[in-house]
Image (cartoon, rainbow, N blue to C red):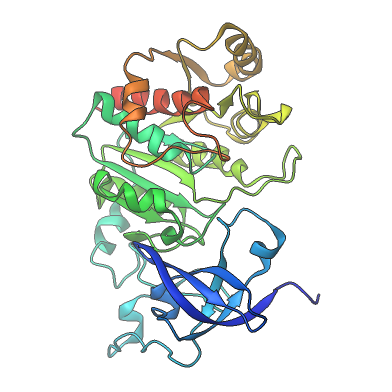
Length: 364
């Protein structure tokens, strides 16, 4: 199928912002236009002004939700050095992610034999009742964390980056800004770039509990939710599978609901169809689904109506919202979902913070 990648070649003119694992660039194209691009130095090296770069510009040119970037595929005239060699190359890890794509990285999995944690995880079977908050969108992460910190400022929180959105953890400026507030990030499935790498959500959850010694974990995809506007065609269906994984491992699933009075799309107002499908149709194990107190009466009625069928399987938990607004406003990173900030979509962030508060109250 031709045309799957829109290639461009250009020259770096400016190195702009940098954050953990990523560098933002201005690239001059042969036709005189300038294109904003993003490079991941661990994959392609660190581009400098004057370097020729090859770009995948498809999502940018199509206006898709990539943050407005072309992506650097290679710095062809200045390739990075090979990683250090060991006697047995598998000692450096053999977990392949973004598999069979041109930029597949080969990583050390937290539970593979070369890992210092292999023995610990080979014996691990349970999360020991650890609460785990599951969320549809990456934008819920800082709000959930704000709710946790409001009541349990000293607890250890691990983040599990699933592969429904951005695969590289480095794409997320939110995650870079929260680094000091997390016990660590574990990238699972095809996602990569976390503090630890796991092949499955199950092994990642066990690593959160037993390697990072987390008191609580948050599971959410990276930035860039995929959706087609159909019941089943969105990457957030994985939230329901996350509930099942937490339950089978002996954890306590806590569902962060996607609630909004501001989204212009009817399917996402009240309780989003993403939450209704993931928790109502995909999650086979019961979870605590958290509703914040104090929602506007009309919105509260919509939420109650949407959740009524889910109450047959799940526990609908009403959580006081006192102090959560202040906690959200004190977030270490800006809050934004679908281009809307805290005041523009207050219910969305409040619901996520309430899920964090409830999970904090379950810590043994």
